[in-house]
Picture 1 (spheres, rainbow, N blue to C red):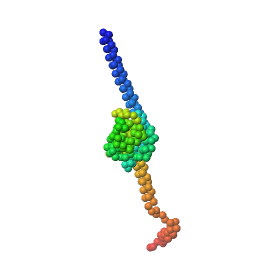
Picture 2 (tube, rainbow, N blue to C red; picture 1 turned 180 degrees about the vertical axis):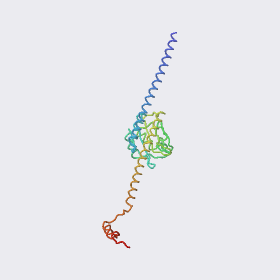
Picture 3 (cartoon, rainbow, N blue to C red; picture 1 turned 90 degrees about the vertical axis):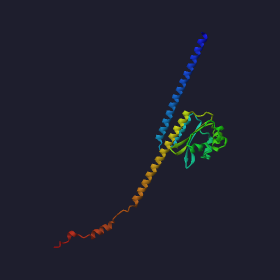
Picture 4 (tube, rainbow, N blue to C red; picture 1 turned 180 degrees about the horizontal axis):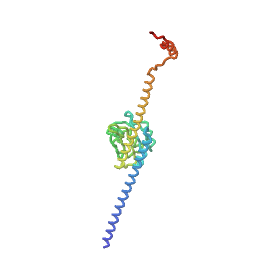
Length: 251
């Protein structure tokens, strides 16, 4: 009898523990979801407030991506004629910053950066220090690990249709792969970065078109000859004009 009661009590405790765990997980997921919604809302607000300049949007995206995903630091690159340029950084270690300013990433199939751009695919590395690219001593991978302390890494290309605009990357300095939710969230952030870039491009093109139209209209205005009559000529011509009213009628 006593053994049976003890067994029932143990079962109840185990059931209560499982229920508490599920409740904690549900609460954590709800809190995470609310945090992600708030982050996305702030990014959209930044886009609306800075349509002609994507830089503030990039800063907001890195702030939210590193914060929500608990990453140590983040970098935003854009492509300019196939040359990668750092457009925004957050909490990047100083020695790694110096390297990035000195050595732009190589866009090739032998680098993680290049693969993300060429394949237009997300790169997720659980531990960069034991990864193939680092073992082959690819310069950016070596710098990320040895100067930036990188272990886990996620790179998301900024893609619209067939065009690649850049890379959004976040880094952890411990071996802790990103979750599926975090990966999906950063994909969404990358999509917002593309919107910011496209907004700035469209505004720039519209402004340039208007300036071109204004310049063309001014050239046309100046090229049309003005038909002006000299005051002296006007007076002389009026004196020579015959006065038919004073001539006698011919019968």
